[in-house]
Length: 168
Image 1 (cartoon, rainbow, N blue to C red):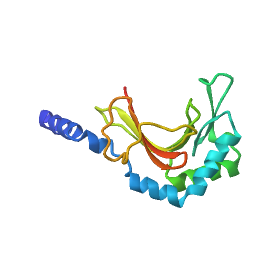
Image 2: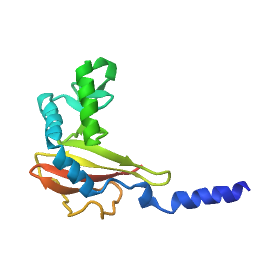
Image 3: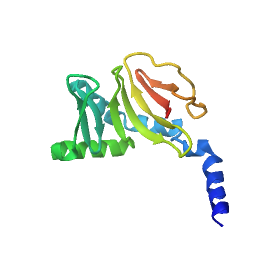
């Protein structure tokens, strides 16, 4: 009896890796960006004003110390209440999990991260960058990601959608 149940579990776990890695559609993200552009700009402004800021979530924020590879995570109880509430409300409106400064200085707004039991992880969201990001595609919805690949879809100006894979 246990063997058939294990077989069914493996069949359903392995049968659809794309289903396990599904992200929001480009059109959904474009609509959120268009209707909440001021909130995106507000969070971007926070990163511009605080050069050591490396991460914001609804739980707190992180700052780089002297070495860019060292991160000091500030727990939510260390944030002043108005600031913590503001971050939580803003991230909630944007349906963003976290905002992160990359090593190249670009700012990413992570909307979804997906992984499955047998497959590598991927993430999709928004990116603001001072430099042109490549490769650009018309739609991230149809991209088949390889290990460690990243693709962009231009929104406007320095804003893009991104889709990235992580390899384990």
